[in-house]
Image (tube, rainbow, N blue to C red; front, side, top):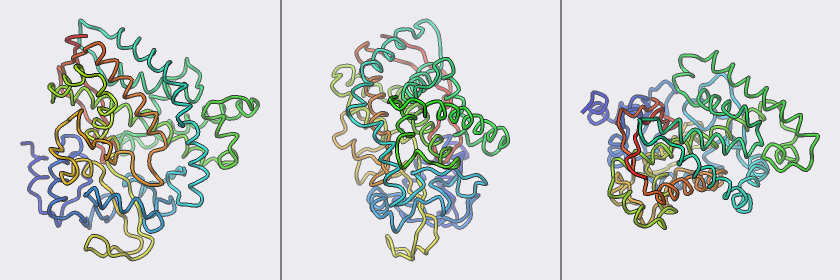
Length: 409
């Protein structure tokens, strides 16, 4: 047991801060969350780098909070939806950081780019690109699955959604890395802000060019034509870009990396998928549950409320730990196992619940289903041959590198 793991397993709960980044890098957070679910499901942290906050760790309690947006606010006026930006100097406002009624029309405008007809339109091209990429992977050497598969597939998909200049599409991956890296935010804030400004300038140029073409159907053009989004100020424009770039690349990318980790840890489970490719759809839900790409979301109480046996005061920060809810044994039997045939895998909360459920969930599921089914069709078996590198980050389950070798398929 590592020092971090021992600390997470034995530290007194009344003084513990569940947001400690190193616990997310080495997996210590999972047994800690199990301790909290059992002994302190609504837990108060008095001191942390982000100020005091409540931790909510049980599946049922998180669902209850998600369904009361008027009582538990997502608004940027209360500090944002993550512990990491609650004390940030710069706030980029998007519909994710809004409550009704402002939230509703803005979400609707973006959601149109992820409706079933649009997913159907994208599916054939996505399958061909995924198939071609898998066939090009080296069979005779070690390579990094994260960068050669997960980053490539998600970056190209978002470039297609935005009709982003193809020759510059790697900029999207670079921007996403800077946006989501906890180390960059902590140690290189000036460089990170410069990258964010670079992204804003580039997209604003695209925005101006698209205003002259009312017939285009890409995501930026849809945003321009939307009454709710077309007149956005620069702060909201930036917020929308940040949400779409991170949501469209980083979260799906990390689940794709988590897939090969799960397959290596539970090879018998992956053999079930190879034997029955029809399991691909359910496997998508299960790997999203098991990986949980966004570990938490933050809410703020808008009034005093008694909840789960504790008294939460107006203005208190409330952290919904999805990484805990998705391992809640009251809902998911043998929750630490990756089980492609798990009957209730779709009950995961990795996409959130209620009005703030991830707007791009369908696209993420589509990309993962295509990848899983194409890997299964090739009977692809993959060994991890070196240390997996995780970002010490309490908000996103960011996997930096997975060195692998293909052994079959």
